[in-house]
Image (cartoon, rainbow, N blue to C red; front, side, top):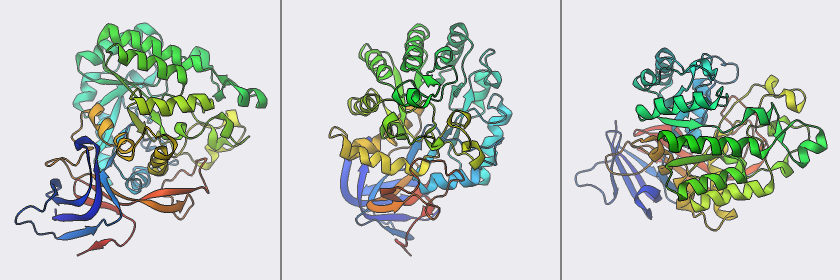
Length: 432
């Protein structure tokens, strides 16, 4: 690998509390130095980062690539390209592939596919139960040995609390992180929108806030009982934020993330009959949205993820309840995260960047998400002032299912480096 100098950018590294104009030096795919040029260093490639921000590459805790099993919605090739364009250098793949990631063979298949598209920092999440059916536990230790970084049942329910308890005990015995999407299915009852004004007005089956908050409360009690490390995925409600905040106050070691679109959209913003807004958990009230933002500001919520779910056109055709939930959201991760600094004075730029770099890396125990000397050179360079429109010319994911289509954003990635290799470059800022 070549020696690279990233010259004269505003270097923001939350892990090392750094925010200053300087250069970053890379060698052998790792961070060699930040600031002063090492003695004897000769750059074979120079990236001019003047007026740009240089930060660690983003770590995304929830990205569907749609392979194996649903390549008509997206592929490793298309979605890792979208990830590279979005500044994401490490991503977690939930277990709801087809077949699900419930055997080492499927985990190894994912590793093989990632190597073929030259995007090797894909971390499979193992299935908590066999076939995600919620009844029989998977072989978690074998999945960990095959490279699974955590276990989860994705958006599928666990049969009962006894099964969840056994799963948490098993995960805890092998020091596996359990990623839990809280949803009490008997209450959500196949709903498609928040149980509120929008659902009532349009006659849609609703999902009450209690479906999430009750599931959070149950899981917190079991986490205390079993000692299992639990990460709550895609929190969406005020009550869930409050319960997690209380648990942290009393010393329970749990973490949580929120999907980036939940921080900007509530039920008041949903366009009637537009299935691009069909997402699970659903967009809730403006008060819920504000609590999610405050949860980030006060440390209750640790991480922002994209919860990227590309769909083909057919999946979003038909009546709102009949369409498949999910948003293609990788490429809006950066601008939506940056805009939080304008909406909430308690969230500084360095703090906002920490939500998608340092903090997810720490939760996963990964040696990335920081510009620490010796760490892999996973780097994102972006222009915070560059405006762009979400359209076919600028979009790379195979899924165009986003409520932001046609919208203009501020902030765009110009370069992405993964282990010292440039995997995306927007503009000719590079000289040789």
